[in-house]
Amino acid sequence: TGELAQRYASCCIAIGISTGGPPALATLFQSLPLPLPPIVVVQHMPANFTGPFARRLDSISPVSVKEAKTGDLLRPNCAYVAPGGRHLSLRPGPQGVVTRVQDGEPVSGHKPSVDVMMQSAADRFGASCLGVIMTGMGHDGVEGCRAIRAAGGYILGQDQATSDVYGMNRAAYVAGHVDEQFALDDLATLIPRKCLELFGNAKPAGVR
Image 1 (cartoon, rainbow, N blue to C red):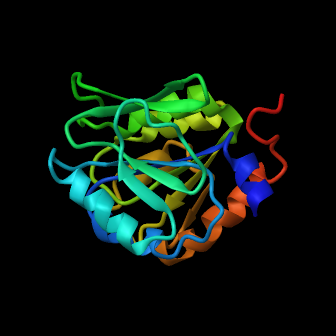
Image 2 (cartoon, one colour; image 1 turned 30 degrees about the horizontal axis):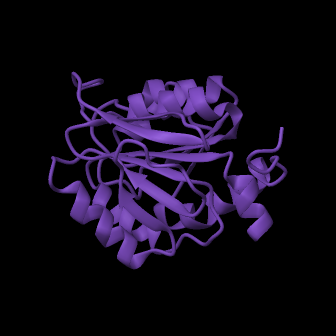
């Protein structure tokens, strides 16, 4: 698993979620097995709520979860939650991909925006990105899912039956940007399985 974690350092899981997200993410994160690539999460949530939310996820999950700040180096087995009221994107750093947190206008009706995060994940990781679009109102994430798939990545969606609001995930699915849909309880098994299938033979970070 140490070698696999090294391989996963050059990959990424990008999760977009909104209405109904906190309990859904709690269900998902408490069951995720390690190793996993770095996870980047946009949950539509006001400022001051995302820090405590990230700490709660951290307390129940094998994954190390934190609220993102500018300059966090993406590491395997770690998750970075976008701070409320700020956009989260990814950029190259001296030792690997790092987070960037910045202000700006809402995108797709939201700040943080799933589209902003996923599009930057597609730019940075290309085919080494697994996108997950989950419960939520509206259409944020449609363009992000499109970008990840266009770059060669893969998209999992939460299904209608287990979504509080089948909105964002429905919009991405109807637009043709979701490869497969699954029940919430199945995602914790399918995400690591899909990572192994897609990224298990990736070159360890730093190897070109």
